[in-house]
Amino acid sequence: MNFEHLELSELRKLLDTKQVTSVQLTEYFLARIEKLNPELNAFITVCRDEALAEARVADDYINSPGDNPFLCGIPFAAKDLFNTKGVRTTASSKILDNYISPYDSTVIAKLREQKAVLIGKTNLDQFAHGSSTETSFYGATKNPWDVLRIPGGSSGGSAAAVAAGMVPWALGTETGGSIRQPSSLCGVSGWKPTYGRVSRYGVIAMASSLDSPGAHAGSVADLINLANVISGQDPKDSTTGDKIADFRLQIADLKGIRVGVPRQYFVEGMQEEVKQRVLEATKELARLGAELVEVDLPHTKYGSLVYAIVAPAEIASNLSRYDGIRYGHVTGDAKSLLEVYEKSRAEGFGDEAKRRIMTGTYVLSAGYYDAYYKRAQKVRRLIIDEFAEVFKQVDVLVAPSSPNVAVKLGKAADDPLFSYIADQLNIPSSLAGLPALSIPCGFVRPQDGETPSMDGLPVGMQIIGPQWGEQKVFDVGLAYQANTDWHKKYPNL
Amino acid sequence: MLTKEEVVKLATLARIELTETEVEKFQRELSTVLDYVEELQQVNIDGVEEVSQVTGLVNVQRSDVAVLASNVDAIKGQAPELKDGYYKVKAIL
Image (cartoon, rainbow over all chains, first blue to last red):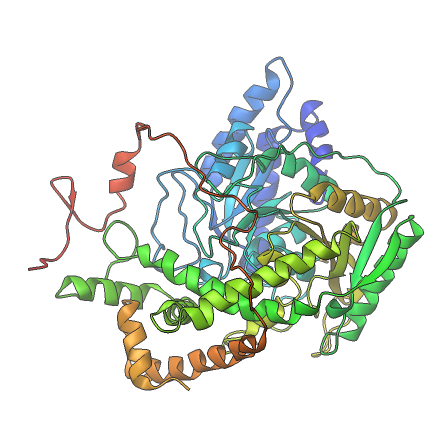
């Protein structure tokens, strides 16, 4: 029997009815990883022994009387930004190459409580800086639809692993597009939570005012079930909100739902066919009863500019902790304490991290702070207010998750603006802390050469809601997937 | 365009040693990023309050209670160099 690409509720049923054991499931996915990872490079670390031990514990639990937690015995992967006790946690960087985490992030602790099985840690852009996974110290992940193309990023390893059926679902994180864009490029469903919905505790920090841990899976139904597990206020993350996550998983029509279609998200310079696929998807939503409303978000064009200041500023602060003294890479070649810092960081950080640290240092330095950082945080306010205004007219917004389908590997390496442009449609809502889904909505042939995939490459549509408005976003996504099968197309591997 | 001296100063502030070639590379690349964000100077921000917390939380505090950590050895075990249970650093005097 094949277990890849089954919904989590189906896996739950198979486990509960003893048609399969957690050990068998875990061995099955370990074998998929062993077969596919040499080519796709989606995993940095595979925890075979730990996973099998956890699976045996899950099986014991399942065999004892009483109900099982929803994720009990089901394998999952975590982006290698989540601290996992006793398991190497690298952030895809040389500086943390040998780092064994001494503690669990809150999200991982919640999953351990469920007796979910951590099967491995997935590849990402170094410290989540990027939109292609090409800045990883361990080499780029390949898109399962076309191994000559990027999977997107920074959660590219997680999205590719789910797309390739190497794992039923995977944790990702988003700061400005890092869940939505790779979900879109790999043809999977991804959830970027409201900022503060899911705890950041123990997730290696990129830009703390934006970082949102979330998930990639095969369907919106899966994501709703996962949201009910990983959400919640955390005393260890004071920016988490007190909203209770008890999301409904009920397919309904969309009568009475107003879907905003923002003009600024369908502009020139984007791949025309991508826009067409998403507009076709909005017609499907209308057929299901939703009312389409054209709306304006004129500050959209400033989003990436604000982000290009705010994110590096927070990165420069967060990455100052890597000093070669308490953990991580230390130079073998220093004569003074200052040299320990300067050489350890020079050797341990990749070019993208260095670029962002120095950009951040510049915009925060005396004399430039007002002109850059403070101004950016004011424009960010305008973006937040503009969204809030639009959400008085509509329930959700729908737009492409990425301006184009997956491009070829190698394009991002020497372009310091690559990710700011790749994520221009995700960044504004991330700056505003909004929740969103990216779900598959069709296929398009790429503009830059051929692709082996018969249908072309996957296109993703994002559904954005107001802060804490996940339920409406999930309702729309669930209704769409109940009436279409784009999320059930898988790469030929 | 940033000057080489500015890049060197930034690298010193950020505690990252750069080679001569890297100074030139980052001079170009950082300038590209700073040019990119220049358009922000045109936005009218009169009377706009800057964002400090995106969902509007203010001064979240917890009670000041010590919690026992059971993983002290695992934490210290990550240090490149320990001596007598203390982190070892180069002399600073």
